[in-house]
Image (cartoon, rainbow, N blue to C red; front, side, top):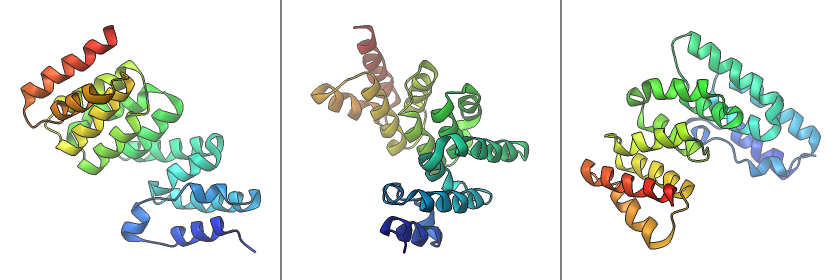
Length: 194
């Protein structure tokens, strides 16, 4: 008899299209037995060969065993001339290896909005100088407003800017006016010197 967590996982595993693109509900893994987690890991490992959707779930289940699998997929795609930005973000978050960040920085202006948003979301949880600079670069870039907003939230959180000051800066950092964004960015960085 399978647990509800495993049944939910199997339903997600067998889904397709937009449902599949949303990824897996990680809390389902918390409801599984150890044996079910092993089965799920094997299924996800097989799925990773064809799709990077499984990567987050694999890391959640067993990061030490998932990392080499995800890294291998990333390297194979890179050799084929493709950079998988979702995998780059996950691998960078897991390992702090700047190779993944460098791959992203080298061509972030040419990727799709969805890939950029995925990477920015991951980058917001990484607090180092290069990632901070990358978020600032995205804020000043012509990226779409919702992507600049996500990058701005990441910066404001890492600088511990809260309340009314954060709300004011957020409006300016996601503005369509490049000068307003640049001025707000300087103001946000001034909080790091206090």
